[in-house]
Length: 212
Image (tube, rainbow, N blue to C red; front, side):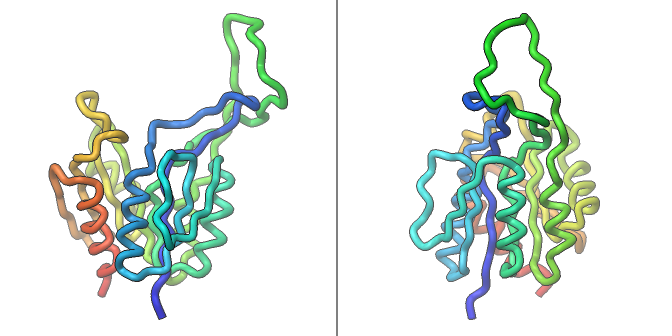
């Protein structure tokens, strides 16, 4: 029986009103490359994707979501049958407490939005996953390895893939990046100047062979 993997990709969108939202610059490329590679290796692949302009690979089970709450529901549902969970999505940490039901008109020079924290999907999934290997991603602006290790430990992950956001590079749109892969067993690997397609193969190697 083939193993099952759940991969998340892309950004989330948190509504302000019917025409505006809070989001981020994630393209979803990494998550989609991971899904392609998982399919190539014969895994039953579920791709939980926020809004992107990328066509899903044929053969994947695509679950489209918009908000962080949507993604949480989808991930926890699919996790029940998963052997691996790879959270590559850039999930918004906050959402507007009460989105407006109609378009907000320009009336004042300032507008105050009341933001509330979104659920920590990765931490929740790691606690609920009895058998699944759980991998997360960490995009940092400073102290990359230190912050990635903290995230790995605090969220109870098996593996974390970290990279740095630099003012000189567009980490979301750039296809050639550097990553550090850390795991809870103390292993540490650095890969420089790799395409996201090539790095997806390396990442899946680490995840599928973890703790063997």
